[in-house]
Image 1 (tube, helix red, strand yellow):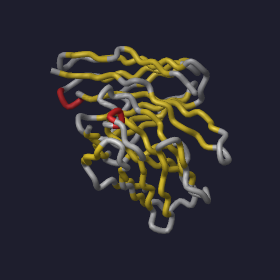
Image 2 (cartoon, helix red, strand yellow):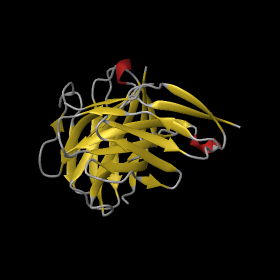
Image 3 (cartoon, chains in turn cyan, green):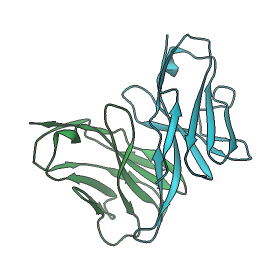
Image 4 (cartoon, helix red, strand yellow):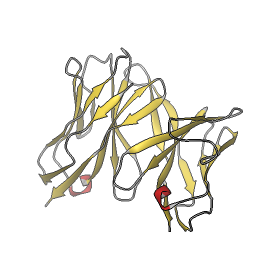
Length: 119
Length: 112
């Protein structure tokens, strides 16, 4: 299974600033995903990042606020721009890996997450 | 549109007992996958179990089993012989194509 690391693991930032979160995978993957988990809430997909193309954003998320880079098949970054306290969340990246059990299916593996607090 | 519903915000279970976490879903797609994830207080998401919409048998993974009732659109997770380390948030999720949609989650607290 894929091993995913994220940097930073946590940060406290001032409103109006930006933070870039890095996601590194130990194997080449086609699709990487970025999720947001607000305090006490479930996970919400922000965008899907494919190498060599622009990220695909979900409803309610825009590129100006959450620019994403995907320079190669093992790395991606998510920037949270012009932050406000409402951006305080855990941000998680994930990748798909194919499992050959009972036919096959694609399992999503998650990184350890980045805990962001905006003051 | 897909929707996942977890109606139990929190549950308490005695150590060594079994606990069932409810999950219902709504989709018009004939092909989909159902997942359960565990999220301890550390925040990481840990995959527990998967059930495909065409699977004839209920999935099992160690102490975890999935009670899949397709006609009722439910995919309940059963944790047998609960351990203190099972205390966490549990999320039901559904995938269609490659996107995961999550339920609101259920917090499980295991008592000694």
